[in-house]
Length: 265
Image (cartoon, rainbow, N blue to C red; front, side, top):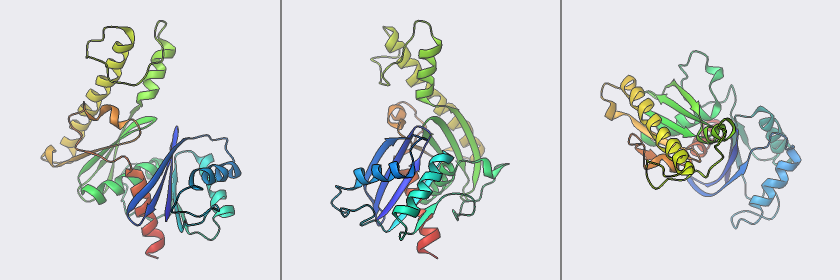
C-alpha cells in the first residue's frame, strides 16, 4: 500500500493507494506547530482501524510519497518517515526529485511542489494542453502545454479567504456558510454574500480559464480544464469552462512521482 500526503496551507489530504486505486482518504487541518511525534499519533489514529492495514503504525504501508507547501510540516514529516517508517521507501517532493515535468516558469524554484505534481497528474490523465484550477487556500490556475511542460499560471485569493475578508472588513457583514443561494439576486445579506462569492468565483474561473486557453492552443476547445481542491464542488455547476473534476489529482500525482523515483530505480 502506498501512503500519499498532500500538505496544504489550510488542510492536509492523505490517500492510501492499492496499486493505481485509491482505497481510502482522509482530510485534516494543517497545523505547523505539530511535532513529528504528534503527526505519528495522528497517522496511527487514522489508519489503525483500516481493514487493509495492520494494528501497528507502518503495518501494510510499503511506500510513502509527500509534498508540502508548509516547510515546517515537511520537516516534521521527514522525521516521521525516519523514526516510524524507517524501512519504508519514501519520496518527499523537493528539488532533485524526478517529476518528468519541464518547468518553463521564469523562476522554477518558486513554483509550489503541489502545482508541479498537479501538472504531472493532469497530463497523465487527460494529456495536454490543459489547465488545472485548484480551489484551496488560494485559487490557482496552472497552464500545461501539449508537450507536458509547466508554463506558469495565475494565483487569486481563495474562496474562504474572500469570505473571511468580507466578514472582517465589512462593518455589517459576517462570516457565512459557503452554500449556493436560492437565486443570484440575494433577498438578504447572507444570500447576497453567497451570491457574490459563488457567482463571482465562477466568473473568475471562466474569465481566466478562457484567456489562458486562447494562449495555450490555436483552438481553445482543445484545452482540457480540470478542477481540483476541497472547494471545487461549490463552483462546478456554475463555471462553464470546467471539463473534468478530479478531487484526488495531487494524490495521483504523488503516486506517479513515487513510481518515477522508487519503483523505476
